[in-house]
Length: 257
Ligand SMILES: NC(=O)c1ccc[n+]([C@@H]2O[C@H](COP(=O)([O-])OP(=O)(O)OC[C@H]3O[C@@H](n4cnc5c(N)ncnc54)[C@H](OP(=O)(O)O)[C@@H]3O)[C@@H](O)[C@H]2O)c1
Image 1 (cartoon, rainbow, N blue to C red):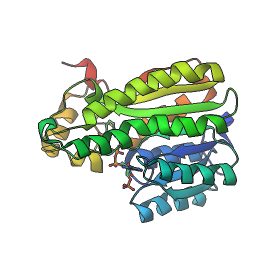
Image 2 (image 1 turned 135 degrees about the vertical axis):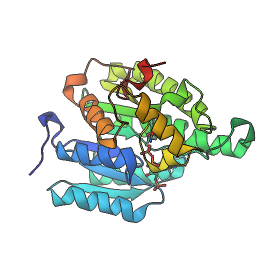
Image 3 (image 1 turned 90 degrees about the vertical axis):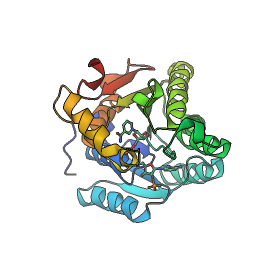
């Protein structure tokens, strides 16, 4: 197979990437496939984009299947995990990448909005981990969540996604504690601002992106591949003793006041 992987142990491992049709998830799916992992390309609405990701993976000799599931709904997760169990019989890597939220002020968010956002962007990590753990092999399981500055800081217009990211981070640590004795390693990536559909939906996105570009020591904002590279490392055997941590991938943005 023509891949350009650097972690040979990932060859043949089975990886679920949520929200893999575009943005970070797409880059993560392709990167893990380049390492030789078999990919479940999860999506909710973006059918043609998800199919395109699976097709791209197949063009370089990889294996991928796209699967529609709203990760905020447990019955949809049940169907996805039935497919994973019957098609692959195991799962080695979960990248909890998908997030959902309506931008705006926290004070304007309805309780329904709160419930939907927390279900898709935070509770889903726990719901997925419960279903994934029994399919993971001792010592090989990896669960990786994706968070942002909004879990710890106020991002104007980020709405309920901020509280959801704070919950996601806490669940990541709790799972790391409970699953490490079973040989499943749980960590996260705290990504800086990237120019994707989700960041474009935040009010004043042009200004926010220009500001981040200007104030990032690395001289550019984050690209999806930067996040994918860190995910591949956390998925690898090299990261086996990193547990319950968040790797900050932001070009140094958060060290500047
Ligand atoms: N972009 C940034 O600046 C940035 C910075 C830090 C962290 N992050 C985090 O990185 C992750 C990816 O962000 P992104 O910028 O790549 O976003 P994006 O381009 O908007 O992609 C988000 C993906 O999540 C999927 N999704 C949303 N709700 C879902 C649900 N209920 N079930 C299944 N899939 C769902 C979407 O799928 P459909 O289109 O099929 O609905 C979409 O493919 C998110 O957790 C985000 O919070 C982003």
